[in-house]
Length: 455
Figure 1 (cartoon, helix red, strand yellow):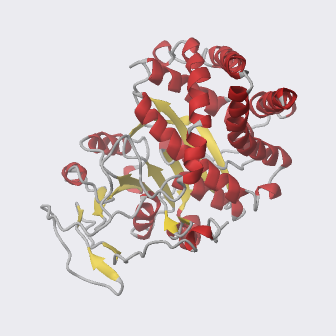
Figure 2 (spheres, helix red, strand yellow; figure 1 turned 90 degrees about the horizontal axis):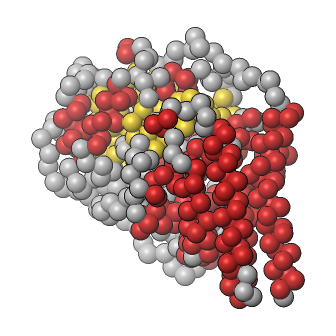
């Protein structure tokens, strides 16, 4: 059995080497000098959609950062969709909207989840491009313009930006995450943008063709695991289905938004648990179509899935046969190599934007926990419906009957219930949300069904 562990260790290290290093070097060696086609003159109408859930007063900063974009004001507006927050976030968004005729605020009567909240805004606008921005980020002034220049062909459906950390100098954990984020965008994810097949674009900052979102809306509206609607991993789910439909996706690393990283291990592990659930569900779902992509992209995708499932097995064997600490030292050594790469690739960054590469060594101790403990937990809790963000209160999934000071439309349409909705300026219009449905408890038979019909 120890011999088997050695084989597993060697296979895992080879997998990591191929996925994290050789793929990027392949691009440098064989695709050096290739330039992506850009169109700086493309200036479509844009609606920036901000799904909001329990962000408090911080939402006002996000709205301001969007309004400060160096893009034609008459071609850019903002829709904030409050997904039934319980902490007064809606009021903060409402007050911020009073100062700009370009901002509209919608409020769901029940918690629908991020993707369905965005879909409401998509239906409420006729803009050519939808830019999704998370409610806890600050967007660089040139970010939207940089994203738009990639829409050079009709089949380019989505372009993502780069997520940076605003509180990277707070403590060792935020510094570690800062190095991890930088390395991930500039190195690990290098393969997929090169082939216009990025499988996961962050909802923190991504631009979509509205026509594609409308085309995929039936799939996006009904997402469930074992009969239970889920709300985690919606960014990855959407991107994967865009690629599955035959469209192109890419990233622009110069289009930057900044978000606050979690500052303690409890929140960090909660975040990683949510991401592991998303990884498992969408890696499995991707098997139905990723083989149609370029071989380099397919290999990268399968290696990520193998690493997710293989590493916990490796750690378990190491604990049983006394190889745990050698494995940890190997992980630390690998992270040290990543730190060297970070030092080299971040040389052009402003000094205040960089942190010591030594902080990534912390991953050598954190990663075994996130994989060995959280992957099994994620696998057995795939039907969780929680947003699970930064320790927020639970979402209200029953009608919210509280009243806030805003114009209320009592008009009704078939199948729609009136909701609290406001708009400012001359763009006033009524908004609606789907009438809440009663969901029965999933039976044991439901829980043995396939993960989703859409896969």
